[in-house]
Image (cartoon, rainbow, N blue to C red; front, side):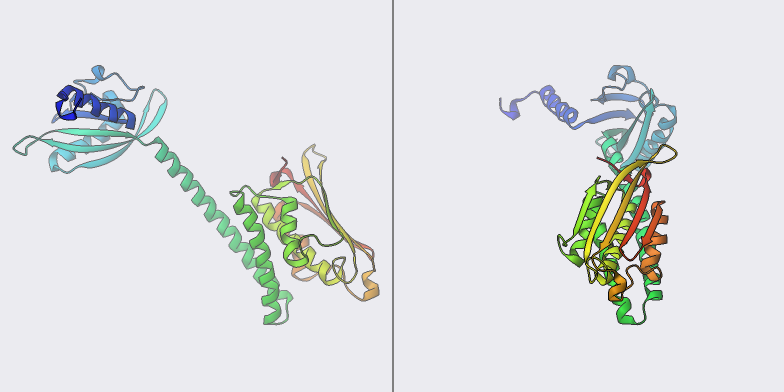
Length: 335
């Protein structure tokens, strides 16, 4: 049937079908804001026949009707369209709607009523809420990162003797943080797997699979804060090992182990241990296997344990180094 031969009632049905599929409702009111016509009201709302001759209170409740009525009277007085977001809270059901309020004028231009187009914006409001939450979280994490960087800069400056030495150490440490941050970001801020985090810290310094290095135990999923700080500890352990230990002049092997245990309060903890065993005692080659002072010692013994609320054990002998963190279950997940 050609479109120009359709009856007016058929055309109206087409329009109403389009509105229904788009989730759009319409209400027409006279100058007294009495409802004279409505179409495609949401399923949970009153029936159209039940609101004819009534006010906005029949659709939105008394509290919201006062706001809506004020906006519509403003449109009648000024002749200018308006928009209004409304939270409808009837029958313990909360839904957000956007109201487009337009004046209706007769042939002479005199305003004789208002037409309200109602759109369901629950999805939009949900996305706005998620976005605000993400922005707050991003702001919080950014401040944490800046605080860590400030601490790294300050501690590195105290333990270096000239600008070149400072820049070399500082850049390496910032790069270490960047590698951990990449893993956290790739997981949508969920965190990073322990073994993958370890590989990311070793690779730039000692290669993909350094000889004598192995990982055993449970590959826990570290939460973002834990991943960033443990990555920093792994960086310092690797740097120290390359300079004086098993990855460097002393030779030997390193085992990174992760084991889940119950503490005295019957709560689960993750025990992460770096055990470095020397082939040649460092004293024989005249090196110090684990400096207790300076930035490295501060990171391993104070900064990382405090950030993870973890207990630390750092034992150094002429045959091996044991660095152990006992991490509470608030800092990790197990798959």
